[in-house]
Image 1 (cartoon, rainbow, N blue to C red):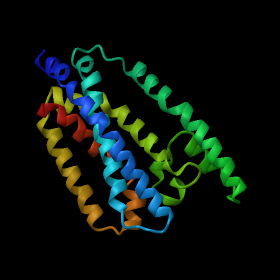
Image 2 (image 1 turned 120 degrees about the vertical axis):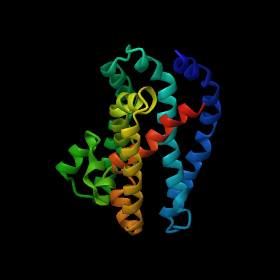
Image 3 (image 1 turned 45 degrees about the vertical axis):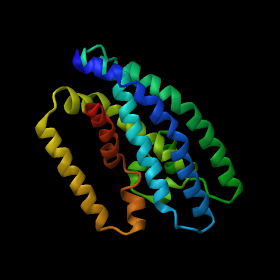
Image 4 (image 1 turned 90 degrees about the horizontal axis):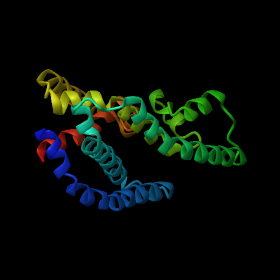
Length: 214
């Protein structure tokens, strides 16, 4: 009950965080705009923006759905259907438009890449070439939905049971990810770290853990 009350009272923080969406959207926009101009001096603007949105998603979901996970009224399939309904139709429309534009530009049709993008699985391939096919930014949606799939499990382990073993394993996982990143050049990071869903769980979990600090 205390956790439910805490989650309810913490909704006042959402307005502040939501207002920051514009700032981080602009960071991502500026990064991609300069990158298209061949200017790579604002590389971390995109990283910061994307990381923020994964953290925000974990935090807001914890506030909105955490109580139902605690009292066991959480409807997993209904939750996934609602989330998918928000992102999938727009994804299909934008991918179709981007694919048509790619054909006009001379890009060859690839059935494997197309199917992976349609089902938002391209981010699991660890290939920058795969990510850039069609709508290059749609990897975010697939990775975010992967986090949605794990949300109730992560919430139970991190907030409800406060599983120490799981937290230790998550900490070791973070250290391993940082070690991998420190050994990779920027190109390898783009392929492996930036969009790979299992590694983006770290940011999402940070958002869930922030609820415990309120």
